[in-house]
Length: 266
Image (tube, rainbow, N blue to C red):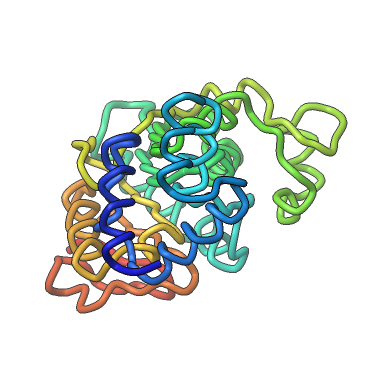
């Protein structure tokens, strides 16, 4: 795909889906688009875009493809071990003196996909402090992924590989695969369709989690997003990124590294 064709495709996608591909890495996105067109059965992008205007279901499938969803419960398990054993307990202690009696921690799961990440937090918080009222804000641009999250699943065996038998019994419906999260856990999450790049955010979070999402964006967009996450955190709040991600020059934004995948707002 040459650059002139790509520019025309980007404009069509912006018009049809309100997704701005200028924020994504060009070479990677062009490969994904070439692969999608080859699988679509359409002879050209003009044919495919004409089809999208007539077929809402195909438009939804294309939108879901562009908003990349790869997830599982407790992904990068060693990082989650740190979350459970030190980070969440510390945040729970800190929040006691900051908010109304009985309030818990505030967590933003940004780019939550089908919900495995916010459900992982809901389970840990129920284990650590079940009596407190925690707030988990889970956002994504992908309506199909959000609908699946709000339904509590289904989740595959592979997506469940880090869930313990005790957690499966306590937090999931009997049976499976596929697996579904219990409704009482689903109700602990506030799901919202949200464009990370353009929509306003809530604030005063104890933790912002955005993992394996910003890797698809340009350097300039990454910097903008990390500044946005920083603004959404309270002082001393924690930024939790993907297992292979780093925030370049975090001190320029107002972060300090506090171990692999974790940064504190200073």
